[in-house]
Amino acid sequence: MRRPDALFVDDGDILTAASSAAALDLGLYVVHRDHGAEVANAVSRRLVFAAHRDGGQRQFVERPLPPVPQESLAPLLAWAAERLAEPLTVADLATRARGGSGHAPPQVPGPVGHHAAGLADR
Image 1 (cartoon, one colour):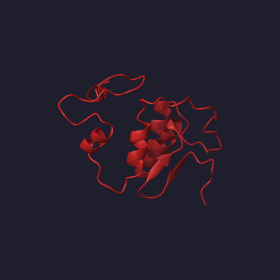
Image 2: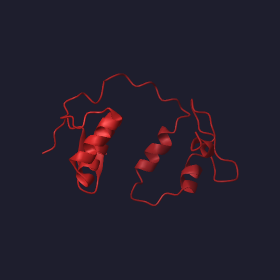
Image 3: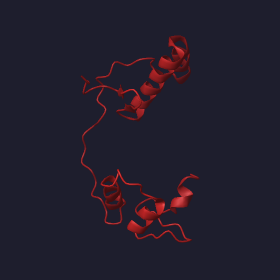
């Protein structure tokens, strides 16, 4: 049985963390599992991070979500989420987002305002 306050979960082939901070816990867990306690403790000291936290820390603080503007990627992401079993290409996503898959990269809507191709360089 899984604990609702677990920092991370190891399901064998899939490991997942409850938050970005819990991802550090998960990383140390993987180091410990693969290389032992001595190496994990050394990494922990180097990161100035606890070698092990039991969980129970609140991972999510409830606050209202801002309204999603019409130009957001939310509709495209929802459409793609409904098709996870299908092979989706970048061209499929671009066509669905009406950005096309031509020569000019689509403009990322919303507050980012950069070309999608340039985001990887940031």
